[in-house]
Length: 174
Image 1 (cartoon, rainbow, N blue to C red):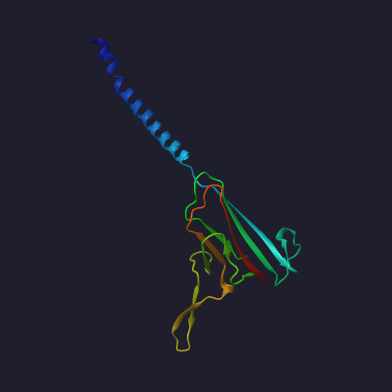
Image 2: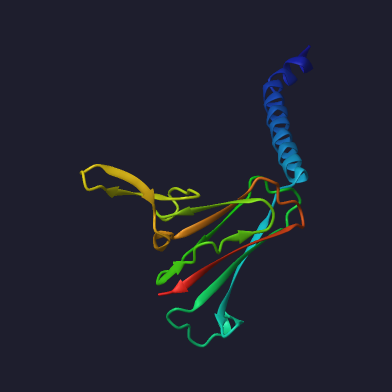
């Protein structure tokens, strides 16, 4: 009888310890399952070429880029993770002092190409601006290509483990 009373006072402490250990084991199991399930790790590289005299020169080797020359930007995305990247998007920016070249955006696969004129707040296949008409009314008209400051490539298909996608666009130096 005496030994039961002696151990009865330690039962709440033992129960609390078991509860804490069980919770820690559940958290560890959840983290392990998340790691085991995998995740995409997409590495993105941007490379540029200057179009000169019917040839292309890497931007880093072109001593000086002159007004009117065209820069050809390529975005390369590789999934180095262990799970697919779903609904993958890549965005290219039109550098300051350049203008997007109409019709130059292209990409691997079936990418939807959209453009932004507000630094990425919104994208549209044909961005529009308000234009005041002679009668005072306002009409939405296609934005001039000179206003395009970002281009977005959106793939509906997954970027699977080990796969690579490329997208490119051109800009002209002002």
